[in-house]
Length: 280
Image (cartoon, rainbow, N blue to C red; front, side, top):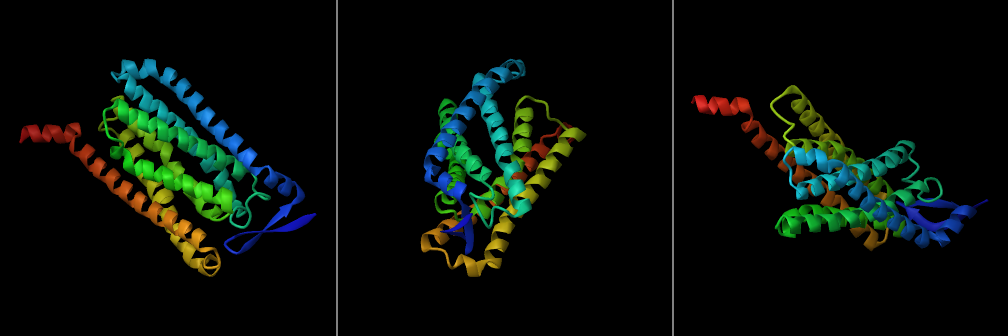
């Protein structure tokens, strides 16, 4: 038996069966539980990663605060995989853009647990900045990113709007594992002027172009293509969707510029270039 609810996603009706209605009645209990579970899981994983990495990274000359940073990055990689893989399935089957809870209930679990991660990572970043003696403003772009990403997830949970946007947003997390792997290996002095390093950097750039710049373009294309449905949304939903879209495009272009800038600096510091300068 199928009943029709009033919630829509870009003008498409969202069919709700009787089991879904039961779920909706307990949605906030479920979502809160998943939020706490996500927060707890991230905290426990952080502790495990810290003690697992500490002997190795300490031998490589890193300080305890740097080990903490590496542990935070391990949690970030695990989060990236737990959100990217299910949403890849969602977009591939086109089940999420037209319905949310009934055809893809896993999305609610993933998003609720992901909000727990953003809470963990925000606190962890503040702690790390404090221990390093840095102002939180040094990581302002990351905090703003977390705010808008969590806001997009919250928008989908509460209003059932922008499910495709959040799904595409999660695809961008495919860049996270390579990003953090490169960072930790660099700090541990494993990267150098060799073929493996160049291949890893090239792979990261390709992943960034596909899953960050490409996804940003998807937001704009989808918005233009479905504009007639978009204008039917309430003003607040339209403002939320446009805000997340604009921010995501801007932050990805900004970070891409910073990545290229850092890559250029690293290239200028390679042993080959250093030897050439000494010869001059």
